[in-house]
Length: 191
Image (tube, rainbow, N blue to C red):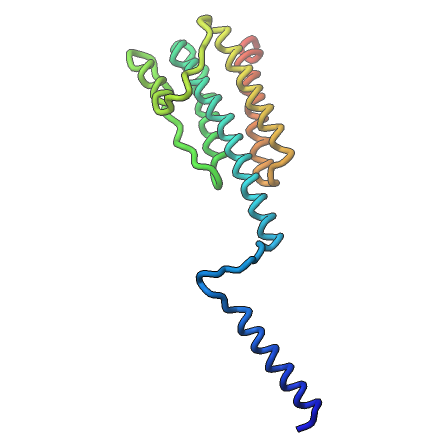
């Protein structure tokens, strides 16, 4: 065998041995491997999206609690508020799909003796959050709900800047619906 042939054979053998050893690690010694930059970026993006979804769902759930409190305080507004409340509940559920666990929306309160019990059920499930205060005057309560709709729509609009494209479309749609709800709660009643 020539010197060049031996060197090639030794180089090939050493390369094969190094490749075989590189794949083996002991169970107790994972080694100082750093996560690949693409994996770290994917994890960061996933965490940011989950936080965004949680904020969006929280804004919608807070609005839903305001509707429940208004319905409990002013049962006569039920024909006007119930369809809007259903829409807000659907928005909260849609915003939470695919990344945030959202409890199903409770049924809207009905008029009668059970109104207070049903409206307070969501608050009793979360003792750390008291039921939102509602104005005694029904018109003032509607204005408060309109302001809450505006606040939620503003939060969804602000979230558009960092949302992934598909979720941004959903947020834009929910924000537009919130603006329409605010109109219906105040100006729409005058038309």
